[in-house]
Image 1 (cartoon, protein in one colour):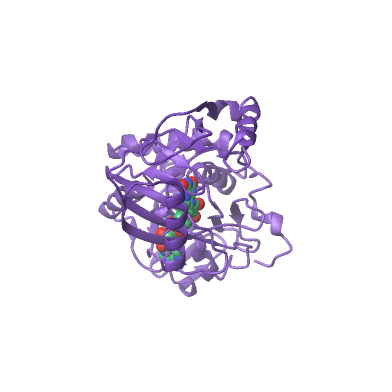
Image 2 (cartoon, protein in one colour):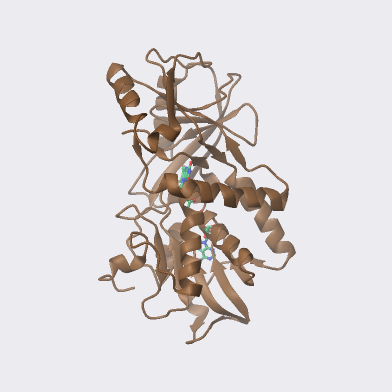
Length: 349
Ligand SMILES: Cc1cc2nc3c(=O)[nH]c(=O)nc-3n(C[C@H](O)[C@H](O)[C@H](O)COP(=O)(O)OP(=O)(O)OC[C@H]3O[C@@H](n4cnc5c(N)ncnc54)[C@H](O)[C@@H]3O)c2cc1C
């Protein structure tokens, strides 16, 4: 018998596997590639909300643990996943310069928000300068998931197929799925949760995001943020990630002309050098009505658990929430109220 079945190998599922490895639990993972939020994410880590210059919820507290977990993966696979890259926030006028200076004196924000600079960046005009963030960067989550999948397959721990919920049998002390038995099962399907009969009523709204990858001769060594992000593709020199859009209606992973035109028009307002689009992709961010993760046990079946709702900041949040979920499932240590699904108790799930 396994300790755990884990459904979903995005950043949430991977974060839970880290806990299982650290606690010597044995497990089997299912993934069907139906969702690709982690796969297409920019992988950026930045604890500051760049629209309002405020700290993102718990991001400062959770970032160090997240980086530690990604470092462990670096040691395990002998690859570099974490790339520290400063973010250059283009400032729009004197008022924003003042707001930047005020915010950068505040606790937490002062760790990241540094000087205003007037550096020349290829193809980008910034008459009011850039506010520079330190301690930020990109995790190459796509490469990390590739490496994990290879490793799991080698050890017979990954089944690349649909998890068929109708085949799950629930017993008081274990679950069984076809010929597999496990003490517990954790669902980490991202927006795929909507198909899960046990947790589908949780208020996961889902926000579609599209991105472009461009190639250009220009050299942009930082992550530049204006109306869009331009971020170096850490896997391919000369390529840059442009993103992203937010769409609350369309729940497909299909790239659209509307999103491409939108991103291109924003890009052209920021960047005036020639470029070529080499890729466009779409995914659904697992966003929640109150913008907090979803973690916890099923109210009736205590060996069924969920790990979801990482929203727009999966890289920073997932490792800590996975740890808290594991400690709750194994040692009954309560999770943070804000992330526990019991906050939606009135919903029948
Ligand atoms: C355009 C875009 C840009 C983003 N940029 C950033 C960023 O820069 N930084 C950041 O921190 N976050 C970013 N995000 C958000 C981040 O991607 C998410 O918070 C995170 O990836 C969610 O991870 P997850 O593991 O919950 O879901 P997913 O990555 O969607 O993984 C779920 C997995 O479960 C599998 N699955 C689902 N149902 C089943 C089933 N029935 N059987 C088997 N397998 C199943 C899916 O195939 C998938 O592999 C971005 C998102 C988008 C869309």
